[in-house]
Image (cartoon, rainbow, N blue to C red):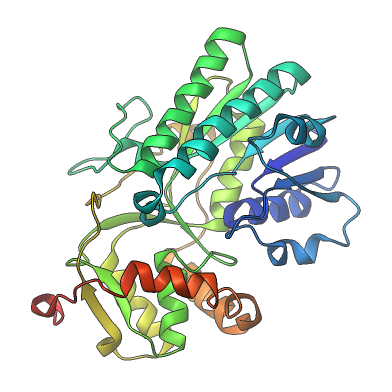
Length: 342
């Protein structure tokens, strides 16, 4: 594969994936197509602009003309374009249906019309819903519990339908919670790092005992790249970090790494439909030959250091519209004094 179209490539994982492609494949060209919504940021791609193998096009995956223009000559499309934040999906589900479902259909139609050799849909472990015990396998049923995960599940069904009905050469990866550089600060780890750096409270939902499997973004990109190269059409692959941690424990690790007291920790009223635990069985991809390389604690320390060194990136994000969103999301949320000492 010589030319890769990365849709949503100005976002968090997409921009890191574009960077990974150029770093690890000397003969590869990368085109990024991104609408540049609130989480799409050209600053995420600033260091790639001088690379002659890189090109950026602004456009919406819901726009067939923009997609066809960006996909012309592409050997593969890797789709990161999505509305991704559960909290925002609870406030405005319609935007998620449009991008996460209709947009994926537009991309699949372009793959079919242009004869693109491979399409990889980037999905999430959240399509399995919460997992009380054990770990989710690729053959487990869908059980989404919020609008975000429901639209990602619907997108997967569109991918399966196009593969079965039209023979579209498509694959799906389901990633676990990802963190690292350029992570938009509405998500837990970057929000808590930047809040701690500014001595602002860290709002932990409920008792903080929710469990997530954490995956460093470079490992996630490596796993997707491995599927792009070695995966089988029509298949689904879990891409997890094998680092299950309670949110409260991660919060305390962040405070320790930043050097701030646990008095900044605030238990707040939980959000609606908050899944208690996610866990991925990644044996399928491991047997194919891929494993994550980074220890969680080392990767988290590296992430904290990145945010310390790149205030230019996140400070301008956490003003204006973000500040308004943050106030709407957390401003009136009840503080749970009875769990504050946990």
